[in-house]
Image (cartoon, rainbow, N blue to C red; front, side, top):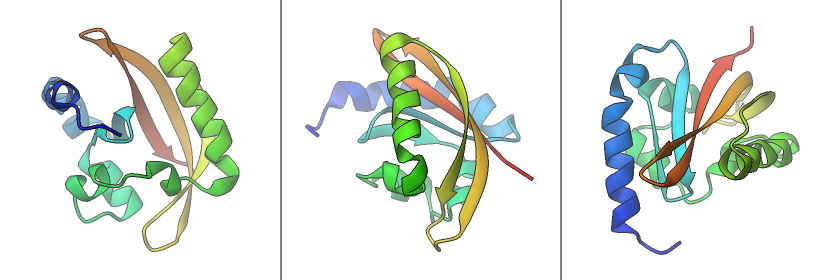
Amino acid sequence: MAHDPHHEHLIAEIAEMFEPVFKNSPQAIYIYLDDEHKICNDKFIKLLGYKSIKEWVDNEYPVDDIDPKDQEKGIKAYMDASRKLKASILEGTWVRKDGKKIQTEVIMAPITYKNEVFVIHFISVKK
């Protein structure tokens, strides 16, 4: 994907706006524009076993964090949120960096900011 300073600026602004939610929510959260422009909270990093937010942000293939059997439905829900502005709740399995699989429930909802559609994800581990 082409380097886009405008999108980088938007991600920085979104991260600042959502900082209270990122810090205070009990859920793992990430906000996604595209593979290169995304941000998350520390709970998300810990959930997936990344060393830092930067390590996850630098991952060019974040769909690989989702179990292959759930990738198609995750992509469809993302497309519905980003193109149709339709929120959804889905169950899915994430794959940690160490290979361990985690069963989750994901709330995915569109948010708009400066004429761009981002998708915010709230992730809860199923017990």
